[in-house]
Image 1: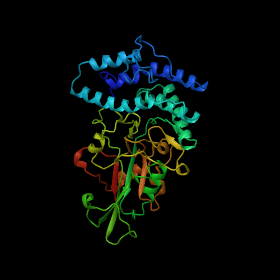
Image 2: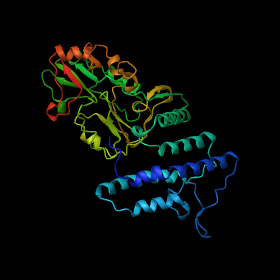
Image 3: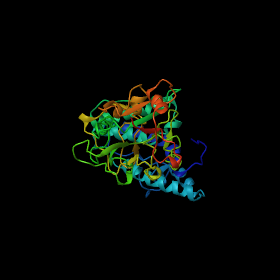
Image 4: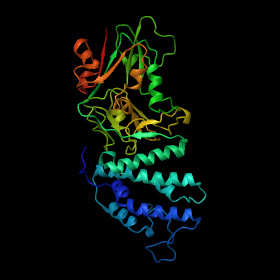
Amino acid sequence: MRTDRELTFEDVLRYAGAHEAQATFEAQETLLTVGRTERPEPTGSTDPDAPSACGCGGACGREDAGAGGEVGSSALDKRVDRRNALRMLFGAAAIGSQVASACTPLSGATEAEREAKLLEWEEYFKGHFKLMTAEEKAATIRRLERLTELRKGVSVGISSTDAQPGVVFGYAFNISKCQGYRNCVDACVSENNQDRNSRMQYIRIFEMEDGVVDLDHADATFQHEVPAEGHFYLGTQCFQCANPPCVPVCPVQATWQEPDGIVVVDYDWCIGCRYCLAACPYWARRFNWGPPEVPAEELNPRQHYLGNRLRKKGVVEKCTFCIQRSRAGRLPACAEACPTGARVFGNLLDPDSEIRWVLENKNVFRLKQDLNTEPRFWYFTD
């Protein structure tokens, strides 16, 4: 990932205004704690007709915003090319809703609501996950755990376990054994805290007539007793391609491939442009058109920052080979739940692993091999 890219308007708002915003929030929190409801006196302006400070740290562009307003003006005056102009547009759209929230008085909110709002603002101003220090990662994880507790009333543990050296994950699917039961689908939904409202599913099980692999005309919504005579079943999900077409199209580098082959998303950096969704030839990515909902009693508390932690509206998500499980030495939920043993998962670099045995002893194939995406997901038959 490149870290020397040109500064954009969104970067300025995120970073240059972060310290000023933090100071404003701390001052506001102090006022609220002692029961005061009046706003701080405006600074940086002697005009009696000037508007009073709103507590947004200058992000709304008022003349009394101090250094934050000056930084915003400088950024807007800068000459930009078409690419940066587009980034500025996205940045302005993203900051707009945050500014509106910041200018809303918190005096009528409960203590928990005030705490959640402050934590949300701290989260908004954090940096890209790959650029964080270990201390910054620990701090954002603590905030996210606390936010989940405030919003859901459930205590969760969010890990940030890195890829282990000498490990590259791979998957194989035995078409001969799959009977179309879809236990894997249910296990995936539950394990990865997928939206119940939209019935989001990372995995699709296609039913096809014997002898014909045709995903364009296959049925993944069948509602009848399985297995159906004269048919076979083939599952798809994210294939964690070695040459993933979804990664280079992201304009803000919110998605990337980890050393163990898992393609991940920093949900807090995603701007929802859906370029990655359009680029994926395997229908593996999902977009949250609304706020995802997971009942508190169904929430999986064992989470990973780059995996199954709670997502939000307007971002793209996907299968990560259950990164919270696989990096802890466990099978993905789909492989563990399969009642017929059709799913094989393991370390491609381990010569004694089951996945390596399959690749060396079975006739395997991959979908759309002509695209040179090099998916780390193979199919085979007995």
